[in-house]
Length: 335
Ligand code: KG4
Ligand code: ZN
Image 1 (tube, rainbow, N blue to C red):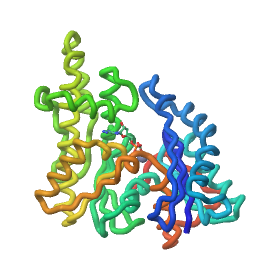
Image 2 (image 1 turned 30 degrees about the vertical axis):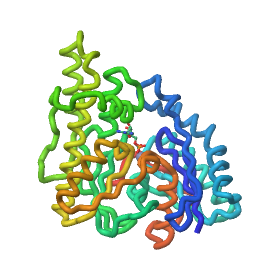
Image 3 (image 1 turned 180 degrees about the vertical axis):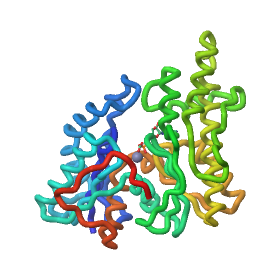
Image 4 (image 1 turned 60 degrees about the vertical axis):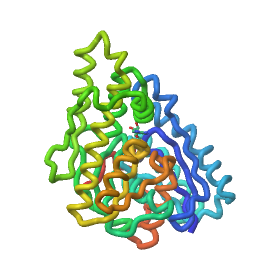
């Protein structure tokens, strides 16, 4: 079954063709980073407008590089939420219309489940059940995954997401948007021990997160060192990153132990962070836990993960097929 995946929940317009939930025939991602960079964050109205410009060329390119025409698509999977409503509507309405025109089934996919199912697009991939940590710009959630579609949320951030903290810290030190990659690059030249930022573990026995206090601690450091913080940005970046990495590593390993899972996966944009990947891998190794990390291209938003998730919904009828009165949703559904 060849599924056309469509993703437009935030600042990437993406389309992909995936066969049987596992073989990526094409995956096209058009990033709006340059549009939002001057504003230090995503501007929703600009995001919607850019999606409108890009959706047709991106889908056209995805079909062409998969070597198929529209008539060979068996079903459509499109992100339904969570995300920016105006942005979601562009992909969602396009996906519905495409399916209607071709008279093929379509399904609305949860973006967060898409990230989790991204680990099945490469091999080796985990067996069920496993623990998944989703760390992105909008979410930091811990999951117990019993099947492609049965996913229980064990905990989440009470305030900022991990990626959001990277983005806000980058903005504070004048590095623009998005911040994850620039902070990670800057941290390579810094000393992570020089400035000690707090480790927000909250209740160590639970799998919730809080990053806004850490972000405020970085802000306080900048405010109290107005004359010399600019000479210390690499140490600030390294100290901040070390704190986030310690917390995420501690939590994913303790979730695996609590749930007696010997397999963990880390997904979402922040999972592209090499320091985090190395840290989690080393900590898991000590506990005889296997770690599954999508390649960097599949950590960030993409439509291949949406097509993969959609495949499992369609295959086991675990979601009602799309009907034209369905709408997008902005906030994560509590699982
Ligand atoms: O999953 P994603 O592409 O979009 C959302 O669903 O939010 O994640 C984007 C987030 C941004 O906050 C970005 O700064 C962060 O992922 N990110 C990183 C890295 N690359 C992207 N964070 C830390 N280190 C990185 N290398
Ligand atoms: Zn995402």
